Image (cartoon, rainbow, N blue to C red):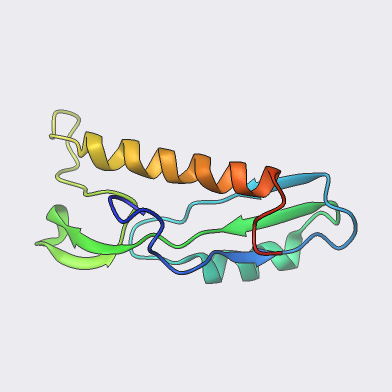
Length: 110
């Protein structure tokens, strides 16, 4: 998502078992995808909740010697005083907001 403007694959979705009255948008961790989390939610879901598990785009991560992996934004270091990828964090938040708005408008792929 970061800087890629939702160019990552469509989210993995666990539809509600009955009429959805709520949705959870779950962002996976570094190097992961939404697929495994969607499977996990399918096993523990509440019947009225739709689970939306987007996939982060593959991008170089400074912390991991610039190796390309799924990441919502660049991670430069782990210490509290490390520089942060503020533009990437903002872009990831904006993309999350777009997913939320698309779901509220009934345009979330299910």
